[in-house]
Image (tube, rainbow, N blue to C red; front, side, top):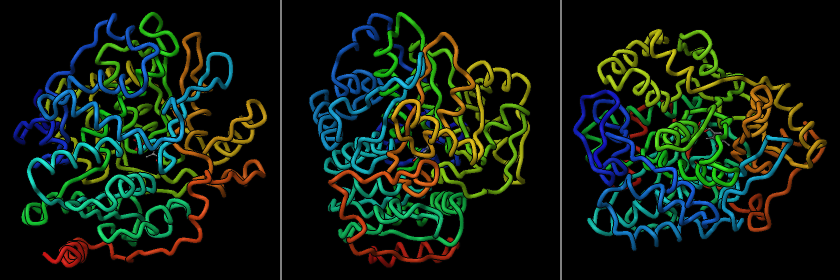
Length: 461
Ligand SMILES: *Cc1c(COP(=O)(O)O)cnc(C)c1O
């Protein structure tokens, strides 16, 4: 299994290489050369299996020779052993034909743990083989950072630096990043928004001298291994509701398009998914692009669902690559145009995107109203991101079962939930002392040279 860049001008890589590399050297994202297929009987055979076994069967064809089957089984077992629910990703019924997939039972209470825990295991195993020492730099709108720190804290051959937008993450999110005491963990509060964090991270990857000097590795949602890990729960959820014998639809609260792109891969593998619905908050570039065919950045307006406060949706590039018939040169041209703020999607590509993806947006008022109404109707307390999903899903219900992804635990966003319902959700007991732990954080300017100097200094390189 080889991986190719969406911009068509970087070397093809193995799974392990693509995982360790993150961003391709031509600025593109890695995707599998071909998507492995699962036959109907193989999908049917997943029914009733433990999450870990489904994870093995779904991911195995993508990893090539990176690990033996025995090794890979072991890594998967370790990755999900710290989850606070035996089903890992339980499904609950919200209303007739509308289900919620709870993806927030991992160690940092957001769906990011599903990918980060296994990528942590796989990177560690890979480094143990090569004896390398790497630097992980991640940009976060809140949840990726804590999930990455949780996965890499205390590891001998990894330093982890996390850039988050100063003042724009929730207090629980910030404390999850600033309270780990391990000296290989560096939380950096950047003066800017999430798109600035993501842009500086891309700049570091495009500075090849720096990248090679510190052995930079990326764990942002552009990393193919993260997308792959997220494909698994589309299978467990769909099979639980009768796939492959009947189709299901999904609605996915989206920022960087990583989670929903995993659904696109599940469908490409043969899972019968009818609709994949993009749900955005007021930062609605993806919904606007789907409606108008013009992808145009407008600046981020901070919302109560901060993990989706994004205007440059990195993984959308992967969907464009497929919609343009895997024409890397065409994608490179669009991404060049985007530097000036916008590009128009061709008619053919737009039609293909619309065949596969629906879309919708939720305003701040919609989000709060959905949290309140869902609590009354079902007893389920939604986080604001999940509420964006439930609101948009409610506009796309049909006779096909709809599964909305619940991406974070309500206790990660207690202020928004309390405003909407009057109830302040409590942290699970294992995190109850989060507000007593001392914080460690460095404020950094939105400046590439300063950031690179800081990383080098901390590493003594
Ligand atoms: C990251 C995140 C999202 C958006 O996921 P993408 O893969 O970036 O689309 C939604 N909700 C929460 C809680 C998140 O942490």
